Image (cartoon, rainbow, N blue to C red; front, side, top):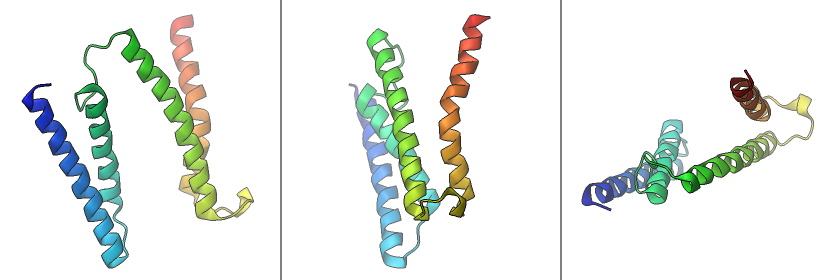
Length: 131
């Protein structure tokens, strides 16, 4: 790995640590949660993980069959993990077992969309090859 790629990785790590530290500081010191810092922390973390996996913050450029298989399987597993986590967050944050008692409608819509996103994409993608 050349020096410029190492430098990018170090910069991404510093950015990630800065955002996480700032978010934690505001939460612990002032009791406020900064949504923008949380989102940017996750974006920086995704760049960092791409850099650790592929040696490039944007992912692998020329992918062989194994790398494509790893990406495909990771995407499938990640989709289902995200679906489960969204459901858990909904039920834990609302603290109810009755779906009619939930008041967080945007999160309820997100959880609902997690159930239909994959089938819709698979339907559209299969039509591409069947026609």
